[in-house]
Length: 293
Image (cartoon, rainbow, N blue to C red; front, side, top):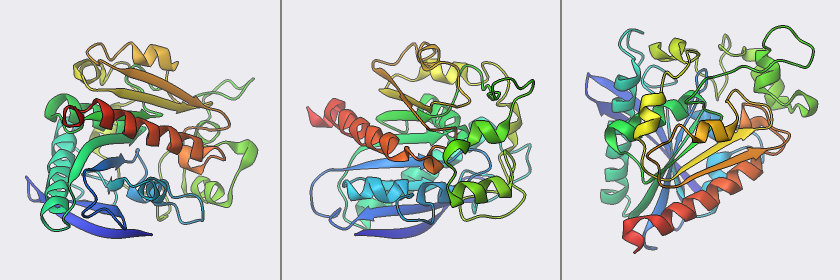
């Protein structure tokens, strides 16, 4: 059984960050508990990690494995504060997200009696780029996973024979569409024009820069914790080994590609394979963390 708690956190600037914590029922009092931070991509909210259909909640899957999950709406997105777009630069969003996460971790310890162990970040698409900046500038996590998130060059794929990039084809595995994926497409790809429980009608201001080559290369080069780079068979990243080469300071870099999966991984028919790989990465990070020695 998984318990959920919504927590709004004040952060510097007079803003608030909206989070949802997914708590395994035995989290308190069972020793050091791993924590997974779940950061959504542009056009999506923290609800992306808890899609409203049986078998589609990534957060509940990880909680069922004993991991506390903290899903976050970035500053400028979802139910968090939405300042003017010129305010929500990558450094500002990374700092606000980090401040909120640290406050939630403190509450887990002080109010919920949870002995927080290894902290692993998982960022999908734009969330991965924010996560890289958080790690480079604030050392937020013990390990990070970038999911469908390029630090080299975001590239929207083309259908075979097509002359232009196809956002819908790149975002969803159209060969096996679920009702949830059909609903997501109807809400707008890549920008959302209709509300959904997993959608954000706003995005941070810096999001418009993410198609530029190398826009987060500097923060990737500063990451020195274990890194997992995962993508779907059809995604918006460069080849994963090319992406891996950007993490020049990392002591441990792994890549994982999932078949029958496009960019929006949690809608894909093979989504559970990615979740299970993340479970293994959390355990790997736990074994490598200094506290485990």
